Image (cartoon, rainbow, N blue to C red; front, top):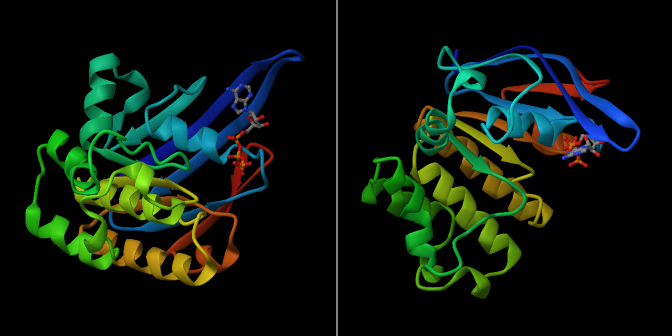
Amino acid sequence: MILNLTDITKSYDTAEGPTAVLRGVDLHLDRAQSLALTGESGSGKSTLLHLIGGLDKPDSGAILVNGRDIGQLDDSGRALYRRTEVGVVFQQFNLIPSINVAANISFHAKLAGRSDPVWEAELVEELGLGQLLGRYPEQLSGGQQQRVAIGRTLAARPPLILADEPTGNLDEATADVVLDIMLRLSKSAATALLLVTHSSRLAEKLDRRILLRGGKVVE
Ligand SMILES: Nc1ncnc2c1ncn2[C@@H]1O[C@H](COP(=O)(O)OP(=O)(O)OP(=O)(O)O)[C@@H](O)[C@H]1O
């Protein structure tokens, strides 16, 4: 098992006092498995992804990635975790504006010490980015930026990918194609994928589906 969450709670301080968003979330994900996370707007999906991504800490509970509780890591341990073990495709693509598409795609792989030009070339081909390698992020459409962000994350071959509506900027037909590519490539790299989507059509393509409701996971 790559990911195992037990009894995760998280509240935010608001003007009305602390508001509980996650109230005891249990979740597991096996290697090379894909899991769709659905739930109403505001149900806590992004909050959960941020906790697993090491961007924030839970109030209580354990987040084991490869058997290690990432809530217990110090700052440098967390930075190393984010560089080598988890890849994220969030709604803000966070491409680096000062370098071109080719350099953006290889950036995380280099940081993770996993540069692989053959694998990168395959990703570029599959994601249809061949004509765009010399462009800069500001010269791309939203959908093109999204495909670069997906390529950059897959290029680093992290054991776990967290994706928040990774095809949300694409039309339905393109979203289907890009998600199929993402699923196939993550299987071939034995990557586990936790994907947030509002689309039940897309969720059906994944190995498993869970729903976040009332701060808990409903299978
Ligand atoms: N930093 C914060 N401070 C206070 N409240 C927050 C903060 N971040 C999120 N929230 C609240 O926590 C709840 C869950 O937010 P979250 O973004 O995790 O939901 P979501 O399921 O991802 O929603 P969506 O589908 O709309 O993206 C919401 O009520 C939101 O207003």
